[in-house]
Image (cartoon, rainbow, N blue to C red):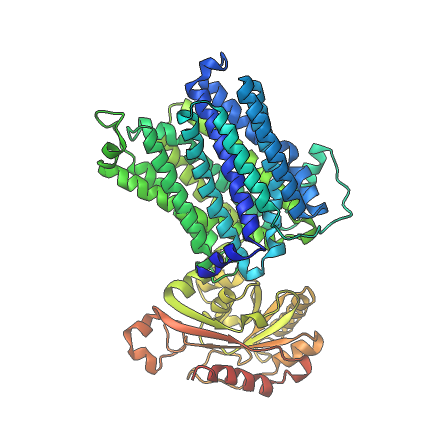
Length: 627
């Protein structure tokens, strides 16, 4: 994880990280301080009940995300994002000045106005926050950068919430809340001055002011790429799921665990630490690039531990409630609850970080901020719907543990639905699982695979899972050309079909299938895709290279593109290879568990030089690097 922490020393990331961290801290400091004041001192401010006031405050903070996100996305695409970040921090200073005047005037209306304006400031900063990262970070830094932002955001939320509660309850006068917020806003502005310029991708964009038209247009941009839009829906679902759990912590602590205010803080802290750790682990588990295979892994954990939290919750309120923290921790059920919350946070990090990185990578640069704005709008909508649904279920007598179980089952249903629409998520998960549990993979030369545009990849053929291993290593989807007999094998045929594999047959067996395969390859290359072929034509029987056939020459003769040679080692003799070898005598090789496999990628070969003999010589040389 050292590489991602190195970003905290880089000027292209550190000032931005400090800016967004302090912004999230300040939002929650003021919001929670206000909620605490309105809960325990409502009579001195208004005749409204605390329940009405706290829900009013929550609604006022989230309302600007519906009203202004579309405009914020347009501004972030039209103007320099670093400049916009500084302007939003200046706005934050002004807003804390408004809050200070509200405390001094003892005016609830002014304090609620300040809360609404803080929501506005957050809505304006939201598209900048995520759209600026691809401009300042390299592709192999995006996951690490997003991980730091997500973990930092949740830590800031936790610290701001705690600080707001302390200031509201311990300070002699509530104006200290505004003074603290003003100080944090000024420091945040100073941090923002160090953010490097981030040029506008669409400087000629005409900003539309019609709220409904622009909101629908932004969502339309997101819908242009199906994977991006479904990723946004996945992120929005996570915020609904997480917000639903977080909202129940106060009542859950009191009515289920039998604790007091310190128990609420403990639950929030454990959940937040889990999300921070899960986010940071994403960079290591994904080897530095955008690995959407972690998303199904995350959704599985969110379901399992959400259900277990429901089952782990005490069925009867403990004797002597409300208990001090020591009394709550003395119950054995509490430790299982804490573990489930921690695990929910960890798997939530696995789920959310790759999705944010995927949106950044696959969104058109000139529309990226507006797509992020659409994400923010849908996030807010989902959270409101989740809150209403939870209120309705609880109002009809559903217990909080039962609500957790219902949410976990809904999470499983949503996951199955999304992965059925975009099988790429589940396929990447299978590939990721293969090379992180069954095998240990070493890679060299992956930068030789072009990040965009067509190319033909050629590799030696060692086992039935070669395509899955190569796909797991590649940062881009690959169309594999495969012998139809392997393509039709039970179980793995499901994987190959959803990888858009192209089955091929020898001319002597099925001339029509062979010609159709070459036609499909040509179309794929014309569409700018990567196509991989195993020029030996069959899996090796001995571990040695078979002669290469002329299929690659025919492909590049029709569509002249670069050829990228690759070599696999370590799979021969494993469970997935065709026959046994000397290594099969070792028990661990019988199953392939923890075996080391290596993938070496060579430099591009021009179409004219891509003869079978020359390519075989290069692949043999790449294999020899490990001998």
